[in-house]
Length: 597
Ligand SMILES: Cc1cc2nc3c(=O)[nH]c(=O)nc-3n(C[C@H](O)[C@H](O)[C@H](O)COP(=O)(O)OP(=O)(O)OC[C@H]3O[C@@H](n4cnc5c(N)ncnc54)[C@H](O)[C@@H]3O)c2cc1C
Image (cartoon, rainbow, N blue to C red; front, side):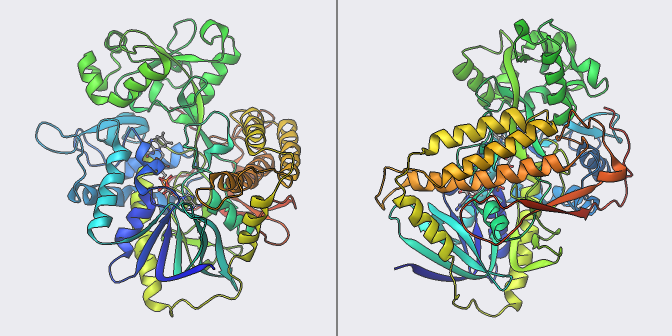
């Protein structure tokens, strides 16, 4: 028997966005947070470099400069009304966390210390500015712990290690979710007046990625399967400095503290591509520059990687530390303890003595579930779906446009997490109590049961690896029509094979095998939506680079993409084709211009 729970509001996801929303929705609203992982294991906890806010603690800074950087960084596909909110409210959001007890690094006079990050500048692009607030290179960990402890203090209800399978939508209204308790296999229905999706990214569709194994976009896929649109799925960010072959992230903070990149000839190649910001240019530009170096045969030993060099002697010789100051190994070890440790452990290299091999790694989904600036999910007609909210990486507000700046995700979680939490509480105050539902996610439960019984010849691991390699090879940094058409055909074939999986574990308790299979189905749908959207957009902008259309084309493409799954809704992946619509970009202040850095 499925267990039924009723709340005013439920939040799916216990990362930064979900917890921030919970803390702001909680006053006067009966809220529960549901998470497939123990909350403090959410990916937010791995964020390293920092959270942006123009506090001006180290040098002059202004929210207008920050807004400009965000819009230009996003290659003008950013909604400027949302970017203005982000830039203005970031200060208050960061101070709220400080008051809740977050141990930020401090200046000598006790203020929050800040560092430089890619694409963040003073005076509309003149030079890098110190805007990232941080706790060494463990900023996300500190944010997540602070938020979680405050949730516990306020007595917010948590359902940990409950896997949400599907959203319940009745007559176009969000009514709750269906979930399975991982420890027991027991199914649960959570009914609510309002549902907030805060389930993070879906980088696991790629082979080389910085993303945790859990980032499979389950609820983004559910929204898509329910006939609602996904926005700007073609824009997936590749972070320049992933550990070679492993994809594990080495934060941009390394370059913020003065680190540089060099090619196989020992050249500081960013001088060629971004003469003003150099190694602190936005990520799309740096990743593509690395790729160009490698293609020109200037990778290290002619191979497909370049070096990240954070040796103090290099930084001091290049005068690349903030303010051209000299740095010592001890100072770098204090500012970047975790990533230095990762280089030592995973690469076997001491970065104080030698440069380390890096390559771009799939990192961040700019696209996702379309929302307004209060987290309300927008449906097909771009009007809000009653009771449905989304925030964090799974949502597309859109403050990141075609390319997100470093440190702008954590601040997005804070600013739009709290706005959506408040909007949800307001919605609940005016809504009637959650009613029982007539058709409660029967399809999702049936799909789970089907998977659990499946005894076919195909294996989850093999299909997943095939999808990931297909996406990295054909829908990665460089895209062509031919490659993406091939990718679509491979993905559709994988979906067909997915119908014939064979699972070994027929048990109910801790059956992670069936959940991994379910996650793969979600990823296959999102990989298809990403590929089809990328094929659809015949221009290059931000992270989306088409070799066959290498220029930005504002006349035809200065708008957001909306992808819909054609045909009826269901719970498993199907290939019924995808249709497209568009959403205008909000341009309030900054007209599109060439992106020179
Ligand atoms: C290695 C790394 C370093 C980063 N560094 C930075 C940085 O320095 N600065 C910055 O701004 N950004 C950084 N980012 C990006 C940023 O950390 C993420 O975009 C952000 O933390 C996402 O937060 P979120 O709240 O949206 O989701 P997450 O923190 O990913 O949490 C998702 C939650 O959803 C839950 N969930 C998912 N699916 C289900 C389901 N089916 N059922 C139930 N629960 C579910 C999970 O259990 C989890 O609690 C980094 C990202 C990575 C990967």
